[in-house]
Image (cartoon, rainbow, N blue to C red; front, side):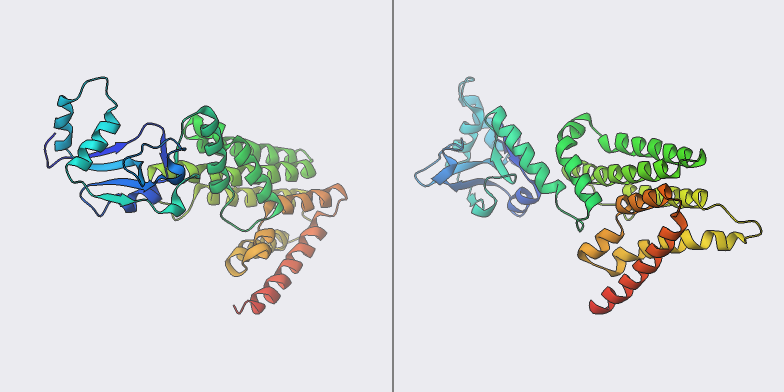
Length: 317
């Protein structure tokens, strides 16, 4: 390698959040990242002087590699590169103490470390995001519980999406064969699965640096859930003889329109609860059990509309 080449050196077992590491490396031609010796030495990092330990990550000119020829083969390559870089005058840059440790920057030295890091990473990335609601909490729990296994599969979000489509088809068939209550229940479970898949897909995109699309796959899947739920409502509320088709479609259409509007004008728990299709599906399933699906839909549509008007006004919308 020549001096014009660049070499990024990563210590074996180092786990680093790219969003933390890149800003420390991108604005400088070469550097050795370091951290205070307190705590770092016991965490397994190599000590390089009285007050500092290596942070496990370096950006070096390619010419440093040529000097490895003078080193015995059995030597620790990373350690030798660190020494050679410092001897050549490569500047040191401190890693902020706030990002050292945890799921941001950690040296994994054992299986127990790996398991602990995995759990912490999953909790950090799967418990953040939208406002909480009962259905989203269940989706979050499922993502944390099964996220590690799913992510090891590779493109696990595709599997989740395929399973969701199968469940939606099952929900529609249940309604067609006169079991709308069971259909509502399955559709609600499908929405929970989709929300869990949303978190898994976000975790898949992160290491690849992929941008979030304007319309996420999960959003499109939620639209399908709405279509299935609306279809189940129509199957449960039979069209009366002579009833105009627009009147027949009006009530379920109005419900799902006000639900779709909720997260756009309401923040926090209110918008999250109203847009929770699992809660909606449960209420509709209860209505189907007592033969009152249409009444439940009417009450929900009116209640949500009033809530949006009142809460949006208080929020200054």
